[in-house]
Image (cartoon, rainbow, N blue to C red; front, side, top):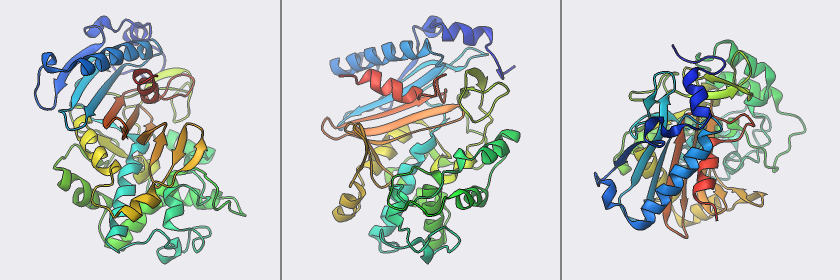
Length: 383
């Protein structure tokens, strides 16, 4: 029986920090190049020692499991799994397990659009009205504004009515047009165009425009521009609320009775659909593929340098966070973070150290609403 509301005996033990249930919190060691643990360098052993300590700390706050993948330069990737993939059955996390990646999806939509711009199919300064006239201020919003979240469009998940619709049937697939209907109707006029306002509607609209411009689905464009060049397959836009096997179960601290809001009740959210975010957050991945594909995308492989420069004209949102075109800068980490019910994720590349990182967790949020993936990244790489 899977958890719904409250704590089972196993989840209580886990939240108390007894991660020794699965070999001191490290469920499995795996290496993409099939190197054994003894082949890891001193710096890698130190890194994963810090990873184990970071996971142990996070597990005391209720994190069931995590997968952490790291690559330095051209060295083989190192991937480890920690904790539990299923707290009821005490199933250890495995490095090959699929999880949802939330807003990390934005990296891939952004790259696809940049490739289409590089090929002359689209233009960063092109108005949205070239494709849709139902969008508020469509003639004043450009593709660049969608990518850097300065369109002024409303984020549908902030709508109580929209969240209620999701909570009534969490596994139901919500269409892109349902999402847009909320975004357009709740966009406040006069619209604050030019002001940073994070909204899933921006990235979903970019995906919609890419599809209209090419006549191809965003999944086909992902295959063409990312999966085929990198020669990987463990990354996809979701078809429904299910995850491919093998997969981890996903958990959440939310309201009593469940829901997409944050809260203090621990429950199983595996069967929640992330379709309410559309292409802005409805992707699923395996850690090894995500590490390779995200590095390719974040480095803006095979895109004109002038386009890349405009992509990386970061808006200073906070002292420790800037945002470009579907790309964030977290104190030198270029990438993206995200969460959807059941899962949180981070992927990034630190150019000054040439190190790539993927963190996947099967808990979307702690009781205070903060991200487990972000906490692990910050703990592992704390100064």
